[in-house]
Every structure is written in C-alpha cells, then in structure tokens.
Amino acid sequence: MTPAGLAPSDPAAPDAERDKGASAAAVPGPAEAPGRPHTAAEGPGPLLTAGFSADVYAISETQVLRRYRSGRDAGPEAELMRYALAHGFPVPKAVHVGGPDLVLERLHGPTLLQALAAGVTSLHEGAQIMTDLHDKLHRIPAPTSWAPSSPTDWPHVGGGDVLVHLDLHPGNIVLSEAHGPMLVDWANARTGTAELDVALSALILAEVAVDAGGEYSEAARVLLAAFLAGVHLDVRPVLAEAAHVRANDPALVAGERELLGEAVGLVRSMENVTRD
Image (tube, rainbow, N blue to C red; front, side, top):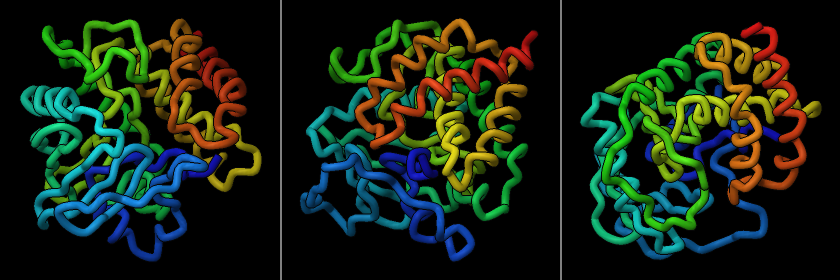
C-alpha cells in the first residue's frame, strides 16, 4: 500500500493537488478503483480531480462542485457538513444544489499527507492535528433527525451518540491558508461512536505501516504510535467492528484487504503498550 490509499477519494480542495509543488510531487493523488475507468460528464467548469465515486469541478476561485457519478443524493452529506460547521468544526461550507451535486468552499493549501511527505509538517505534529480533529468532532452530539441517503449505503455502523467521519486520515485533512486544518470528504460521515471513528483512522494508518515494501511504512508506524498515544481512547473493544467496516469499503484497492489482518494486530499491540 502506498499513500495513494490515504489520498482523499473525493477532495474538496483540488488546489492541494494542483499547487503541491515539486517537494510533494512524488505523493500520489486520489486513487481510482482498479478496473473503473470513466469519462467525466460535462461539468460547470474545468475538471479538477476524479475520485473513487465523484468528480470535482472548478466553479470559481472560492467554490468547487462535487458530483457523484452514481447519482447518489448529496443532500444528507451537505446536511451533516452544515451541522458540523454550526458547531464550530473546521469543515468547508457546503450547499446541496440538488441530486448528486454539492457546491463546496474551495480550499487553498496542501493536504496533511502532502505536508508530511514534503517534511513541512513533522509526524508528531501530524498526529496532533488528527487527534485534535477527532476530539473536536466527537464533542458534537449526534443530530436527532438525520438519515443517510440510502439505508443500504456503506458504511454500515450501529449508530452512536456523536458525529463521526469514518475516513479521517492525512489525505482528507487540508492545511488551508485561510482556516488552518480542515476536514474534507464527508461521504462516510454519520452518527456513531468516537471509538469506532478513531479505530478506523488507526487501521488506515496501520495498513501503510505493515506494508513491508512501502516507502512510507516506517513513517506511518511513527505517526500511528503518536496518534494512538494522543487520543486517550481505547479502541481495542471495537477493532473487530472497525476491521469489518474497513474490509467492506468498496474504495479499497488491490492488496489493501490483505493487509488488514496484520494492521489490526499492529494497532492492538500498540494499544496494549499504551493502555496497559
């Protein structure tokens, strides 16, 4: 697994890809699912990036349009983003304009993944950014009337009492010039538990760490250890659930599922050291 597996699948900040510069040029961009080539439908402006499930078009210097190719209703996602923003969480402004279309505030700046790869941000600073975002997010109570666009949509989780993102990793954090760290790609967000949300972040990092041939495996191991030490939550009781959710992620690329068992073991062993 490479950092492509951490890249934002449907970023709200395409400028991070366009403007990342030579120092981070080696970091892969958003990964398409194998065997799913596509031609983007005509949009309202230039196509900036294509992720696993959506295309992002430029509207202006301040806005982008994100369009789900499946026709999925973007309304529930926009609702959660506005709910998080109303509670003071750092998320782009979002307006649902009907059906699969979501107009988002355009962010200027690199992703945390790119900043880590370029050496602009240290691994411990990166871990702190991740833990801070989890902490802020999990202070937001679950909305009482929200429902996903379809009850059959992945991820399938048991619900909970807080707002969760379920895809919080360095590729989905934009170090914006205007607002500082901002969390993007809310396609998986819903109500859930803080422990499950943290466990999924840990597993995503651990998959990179256990990839013996990966260029970033050692850095990911350091980042994971610092992240787990900083969150002050024991994820061991929910690791099996998190692994099940992760294994059924339709966006996983070839080879990632095979790393999941070893990734679970690494997270558990680090937690045993941290918590016991």
